[in-house]
Amino acid sequence: MHKTLKVGILRETKNPPDRRVPLTPPQIIALQELYPFVEFFVQPSDIRCYTDEEYEYLDITLKEDLHECDILMGVKEVDKRTFRQGKTYMFFAHVGKKQPHNREMFREMARKNVSLIDYEYLVNEKGERIVAFGRWAGIVGAYNGLRARGINTNRFRLKPAHQCRDLEEMHAGLRLIGLQPGLKILVTGGGRVANGALETLSVCNIVQISPDEFLNREFNVPVVCQIGPETYTRHKKGEKFSFMHFVQHPDEYESAFCPFCRVTDLLITGHYWDPQSPVLFTKEDMRKPGFRISVIADITCDVDGSVPSTVRTTTISDPFYAYNPVTEAEEPAFSKPANITVMAVDNLPGELPRDASVDFGKQLMHSVMHSLFLNHGSSVIEKATILRDGKLTSRFSHLDDYLRP
Image (cartoon, rainbow, N blue to C red; front, side):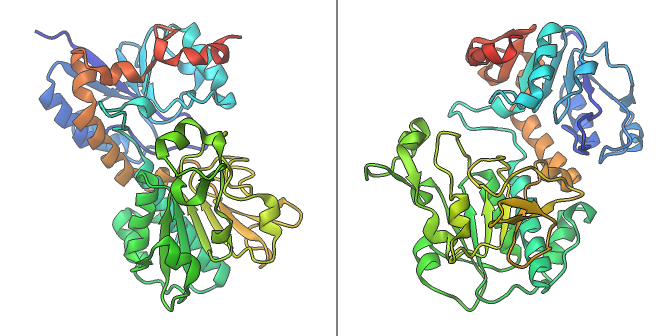
């Protein structure tokens, strides 16, 4: 006989607001049928993509005070003023890289003896992430890049993704646009984000070509090329590229990206970037006469990272700004033809919150919830636990100086 486990779904408190949910109403019902000893409570919210009424309709209890819950689940970072003493929290904490803006939140969790399970570190036996919104970041990021291109060239208009009811409506709009013959789109990365971007581009019937073709040929149809670090970097001493070596020793590599700057119209970045690895290109490169890129959809959103024009993140409501390569300053979006349009929204899946939430909840149900509810010794939860009762676990001991006052 299992003891009743109480799980609370938190109201999102991060600003700007995030409308996603970790579990949809039908998914909660399915979990209750599979695990009768688990009881769910949902904190009311007037911004959530699933309304309070949708939960109530399925007899899921709405409750403002979740202090009786054992596990509290959200999506984004939690307001530090709301942590409950000794509870287990599960959300994207964004503390693993010692992010300065989340340091006080992390310290408050330790002070309150909180246990933190971070979605980002839920991995399988191969070390691969098992829950993520990356695909949706790619899907929406590529759409926003195309939208910016349409405004820049005055060839077509796409409505903002967050104004589309769902992915189906977004795709319907994409099928109506006319992309310029010869348009060259470059996608960096090889994971969920990059593949999500290619998924969006495929709706427009854009032809995918090889890096060699992309660099050396012009086409009478829109084309896209996908490249990974084996193409946009090279070993400083000319040694053969090894992905494992690149991951372990990124400082031994240099950028090989500049030839792509001269042939690319729209750049969509979906690669992972380590601060010790080379940048794609420099501010000086952007001032060279042959620099062709006019729109950068920077899904990576690494401020002052691999893309030097990403001077800040942007928001769903105001996604674009212009970068002046001569002054190296931000200017109003679409203000001058010579400027480069930048999109750097850091919560892109929030533009299609219902679709993204359904997909994320499915991943949780398939790979995580059984271990979470039954605590049967699986390493899945253990590997993703950063704090246990307010103390760092051994796997995350490198965060000790970040946690200390």
